[in-house]
Image (cartoon, rainbow, N blue to C red; front, side):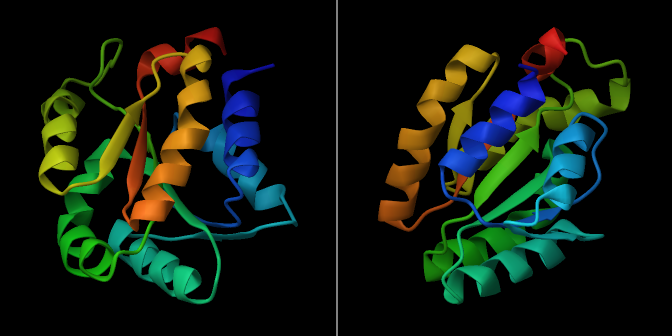
Length: 165
């Protein structure tokens, strides 16, 4: 089973049924799977804040939303996270490729890669680091806890997660 297959199965097991995504090379296979899945609602978006607005509306309509993006996009989302998701206690699952983590070939990605953990902490978005497929076992209980608490959670997937692909 590929890392994408395992991640996809884990997200489905969590009951997530509404996805938005911003393009990302590392998450491309997952995004393709979501686009083909007729049992969920999937919408590609051009900006992360747009996706969070849609995710919030989906939550209000009874859906379980997730946004798929790279960590640089989280920086674009800080205001929406603080003034929308956190303020109204909307639990969104962030599926985040950790660009700038060890193995990153693009130097410009390393600055945000080094800042993402602090940004998640400051914005009070819970974080589960998933450096390999075995750590996916921590995802379901973490998502359930975040939902009960009415807070968002990020699944942070570094380059090491995709190494088996």
